[in-house]
Amino acid sequence: MNNRKKIPQCEHIKANGLRCGSPALRQCRYCYFHFCAHDLRRRRRQQPNAPFVLPLLEDANSIQMAIQQVAEAVLEERIDNKRAGLVLFALQTAACNLKNTDFEPKQLREATEQGSPVISEIVELLLREMDRPPDADALKKPPANEPKEQMSAASSSA
Image 1 (tube, rainbow, N blue to C red):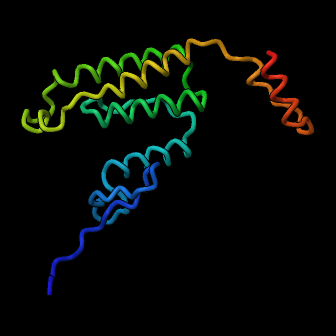
Image 2: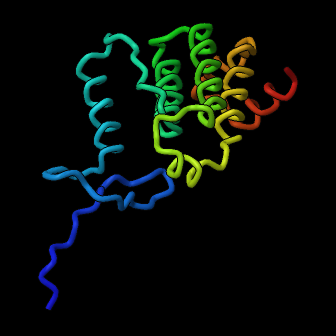
Image 3: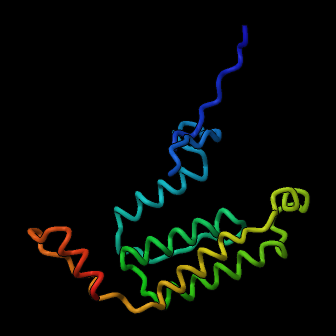
């Protein structure tokens, strides 16, 4: 018989439908990463006007979380597009500079560092979208009784 206790796993379900599976913190349902993410959302719901604060940009995970926070702040209109663009540029710079930082021992950094062009692509896409003027027709809601054929004909003629 195996007397070892089974280590509780994080119960967070990712966007792809899979469970995180990292070890959960003691007396908690989530791993450290997801505990912080869920706690941040909880605090934001309790204090919606709290100032926008980025995490310390010390690794790729913190930069990814910061990008998510900026995107959420833009969607919730807590930060203007110009400021968001500047923050995203700073995050892109931080992502590019990760290889030059030494917050972690060199062996760990080299083992996990494969470069992340995805972050740069996401930042560039967000910056391009913020520079585009809003499409006034796309923001208008069609009348509820208008058939779909008329809506598609109207949008294709615009």
